[in-house]
Length: 126
Length: 130
Image (cartoon, rainbow over all chains, first blue to last red; front, side, top):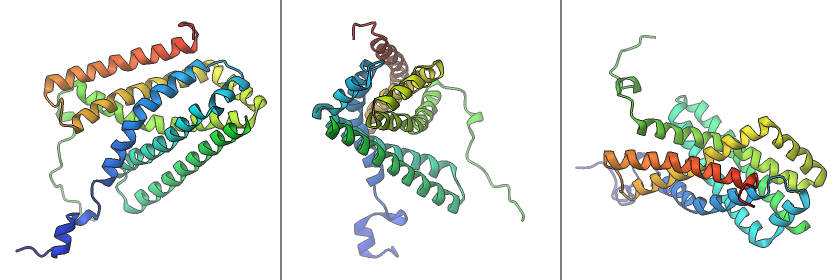
């Protein structure tokens, strides 16, 4: 006989109260990051030494700005998911882990917003 | 406080070294390194948004030997994490768990990360006419 309620059994989430969402989101972002980063890394390598006007014209084009924005969103989602796993593995004190996770998530959010802002400013400014 | 010596799960030192474990921890290390490296990317984008003067200043800094070393390390970490990430996705699809396959795919990942890094830097230095 189980002491779990029928509802809890139907949800099937156990004591963690979470399913595979975190794991799946980490994989989903990694799938889109493969082509995006191959494109971005080689494009930016081609911009090495280029002056501001050339680089801004490249990033300002919708065909580059939109994929770059997608890359920023996927990259920072993937980043916070990865660092979360690392922190959960190595920080064993509950309050320290919680503090580190909160600080990390808002730092990543700040970087993501700054990156989006920069791309939009270049895209709309040129 | 009394401490009880409870049995612990085996630590790393009881295992014989395998290349696959080195590749595994390098995936995590490059991941953490890339997370720090995002600051560099955001800085570059903000410099682009700030205008020609600040962009030239940032490019000057990135052009120093230390800047180039950081960029080189970051680009290799990116390609390694990307290639090994594909390997992880294959494992998630339940492919390649056999010891020999895992070893060979790991060596392929290491080789591909070096080739891609050198390719990107040849483009950066205009060796391929880019």
